[in-house]
Image (cartoon, rainbow, N blue to C red; front, side):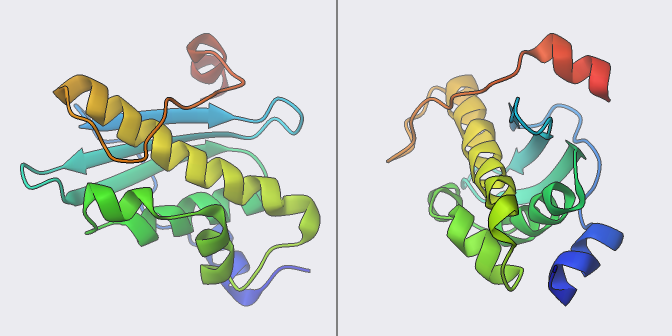
Length: 145
């Protein structure tokens, strides 16, 4: 059973779309369930996330966790965004069924992947950030959208 917040974010997702010339973009996926998440970040010169958008191909929980993750990082500093965990995403959604916890992990990984892309493009180091692992290749993502 899904919480009201999960259903709201699934039925009315926030921040859906793309950001052209994004400061950072991260794509992650889970080969087992087929969920694919892409998060776009627009980061200003003070390292504050001005805008964030997402595109997700997957189940309702994947859409809801993507939507909530964007809400949690919008307006935050890069360093604060690094601290957003899958647990924080789940708590903000009032929980997820155990079989859908992996969706919240994807949301955390997508944020980190977008931050990694931003750090690579701008030649900066973000404390605590490591190169993300992804199960999917870019070719597969383009076919899904």
